[in-house]
Amino acid sequence: MPWSSWIRTAEVEPSLYAADFSRLGEQIELLVGAGARIFHFDVGDGHFVPPITAGPIVLQWISPLIHRAGGAVDCHLMVENPERHFAGIADAGGDSVTFHYEAVSEVSATATAAREHGLQVGLAFNPETEPEAAADESDHVDLILCMSIHPGYSGQPFMPETFDRVARLRKLVTDKYVQVDGGVNPTNIGRLRAEGVDLFVAATAIFGQEDLAEAYNELARAVQ
Image 1: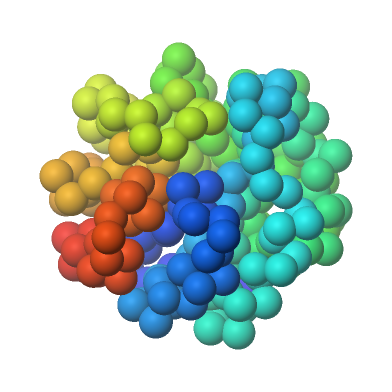
Image 2: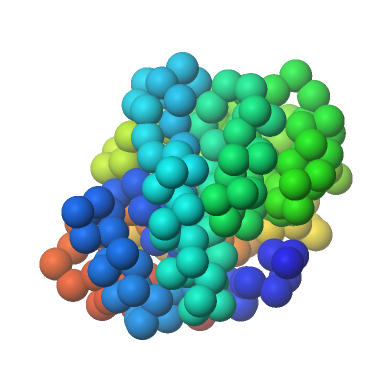
């Protein structure tokens, strides 16, 4: 299904990278009960980013929990050669894949390869890449992800220059979803929304709190 079927006015996406993997299913069900519908699933290959993170083996177990609630799994591929992973992600229940501008030689061909597996497509760009470069490729994708930290590790502080970067991006891209990932919290999410962000990936701001449901709802209230 397209992103337009999943997203309400805006969405806070719990980032499962920061979850307690010994309680992963329990935490997903808790957040579903709180209203979360789109979950962010990070894949790192140890090359494009240093960490090696969870992949399709984990995804195949959690995607049914999310789909039963009418939700979707948004997979962020922090990897080299992302096209090698599309089939595995789709087979494991992923709904959308976002690959990095810096990791591919041709955005259009990579996006086409993802769509061949029935996946929605996003394009991420790192803090070193200008928003204009990503915007030039927007015709090929459904969303553009502006990284507000360096990809790879959760818990990094939000880069304040992101406000200007997303504002520039939104002026250039009016018909796509804009997403931010990294350091999103209750103190900056309102301004990000005002700058035109639609999708807010939240890791520590949710999973680093004692009450996950209330942490999610605090963020969700700030953007609705």
